[in-house]
Length: 301
Image (tube, rainbow, N blue to C red; front, side, top):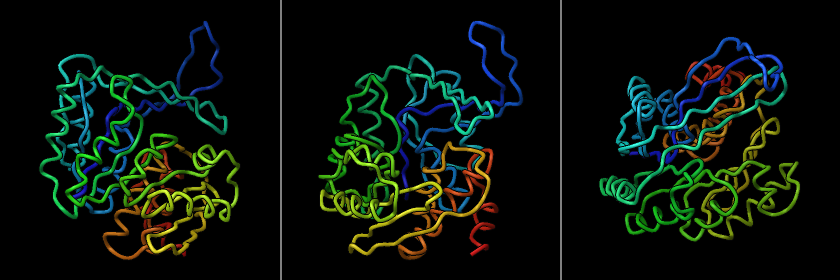
């Protein structure tokens, strides 16, 4: 079983609008609502690819109820810890016609220690060969070493860990030898204080992350495709698919889902191929990629 953990899930309200005038009334255009958070995004794309998963994390209030209901409607199993107060965050994504979106992200509810222990109790069902995906930001009410604590807790179970995080959040889990990490080229550059603008440079630093403990390192590079250094040190490079970028939210999560699904069905070449297609299909659509969009891209090869 694949378990995805989203500590700070959200309702994403994505809206088209023109130029924003501060201190004035602004009329918004059409909007769409998505239920997400990085781990949840992974579960949603896995479901499109026919791979079951269970979504874990924290939810609160009426927004939390909506998130759980929205995910369940996609036939994804959930086992969230319900908080007694507050509400799950709402993120607003403003599409103003510029190349980048403007994001207003909520903070999320306070999470008490007893609820953290309740989340850890959910991990008892995990067994050897299962996969856990840790992705996304950590709420301010939880200690910054929560990913480390989760992997330490699971260390004796021989679980495959996938970590999609940045900076010290990523570096500090390497001692637990995660099965896969997926920084993008900008995050890789921040870690090593360099500009990572070529696949060759990405390979150089991916190899260093392997030396630091990662088993497989997948680097997403937007229009330059992706680079994978696998557990044997073999280098795989995938070109990006061609298309019009409509959406920057969830492309990396989609790549993670595609890689996991590809690895379940085949080897590393196929995992990278499917992961790149999933990331591209999401970037070329208004929301997360559908199976038909993903496989349509793959047929172009």
